[in-house]
Image (cartoon, rainbow, N blue to C red; front, side):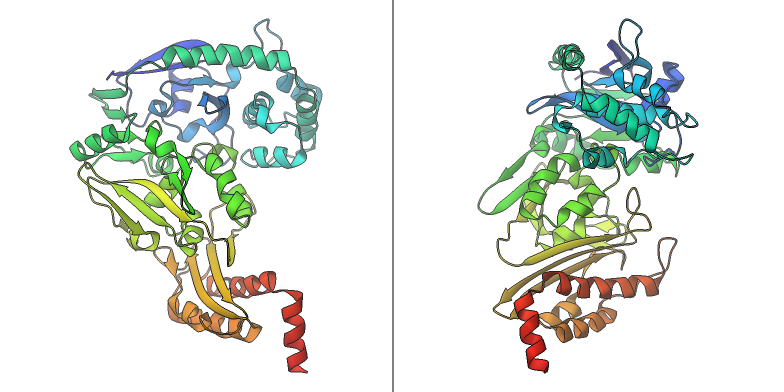
Length: 485
């Protein structure tokens, strides 16, 4: 164990002794290193002005991830390499191709958010997986960079100029440097900081994590910090002890066995997305609107569940599919169905010495499934309402219905009476219209800043009808019309 956080920043090794548990990368850059290119706009991971690149070893080589430094704790980047906008320019003083293109295409606008745009584009430039260039990839990767000055057209032109014809030599040179930096740190022992500023741990194995959890039951577990970072920046909370889970090998695995997908709790959303949409394509729209790329590059499947938010995007879809949670302590392992994890608002079925270790998701080859996210704006917005709907048919009758909503109660909750109104009934519009009315027996939603109670109820009903319309087939509609005539 060691007490120094070690990482490379713009090619130089940094060692931070007795790192405070909630010191953010942005504060370290600006206050300690005097690197002020990265800006603080929203301080909650929304605007992207603080974006930088976090490089780490991946399964197929070095990965370059755009992340929000305002909610990224310094201890979480232990053993990694960072590139900030201050160190992006080439060694001979020339601008990076992305920077040069932004200048030539007049993409700076007011300038405050420009460093974040540059770093998001630089991550695309360096990431082989983003090629060939497409507007779809560009839109996905810039959704987490918000500029409220003028239009995006000059930035798009700068992206096209720099990304379409990428300099492979430049990419290779940076990759070689960063890979060497990562190899230099890979033999470091796990991080264990105990000082006057607090305690920070970053275990590497599940056994180490469980031992720490038992010895520090009141510690705050942090995965991607996309939620915890807001507790610090917005609520001004402080934590005496923080345990980072992002380096625990067992929690980073995705496996498939016996028609079951096992997703480790520390698997990032970006890494879980391909496997999830391979089996459930309906998840794509919701997952690609799960924050911006910076949030998906840091936030985890387990974190979105374990924080117990009633409006978390993942639980409704997972509950509708019958997912289970794997919970570990030093003495035992247990599984529970996901909906039972949420006891009440702010209360989860998790013992003080337990951690959420994995999500177990069944693979349904039969049945109909969809998930929906409703928010005030398409991207970078918290849900007003989320829905996961799964139904299995026996000929023209609904054999099984699993319907879960987030945002309708203090926890993500199944619509039991609605499900009962559907089960065993024929697949017809009047069946669904009756089930829509049953939702008032399942939920008494509240009004808040995101939506009114009446709006939530109306949308929930309409999503049920939308599910029917989207999954109905022409032959069945024709038969229904003929019977009416």
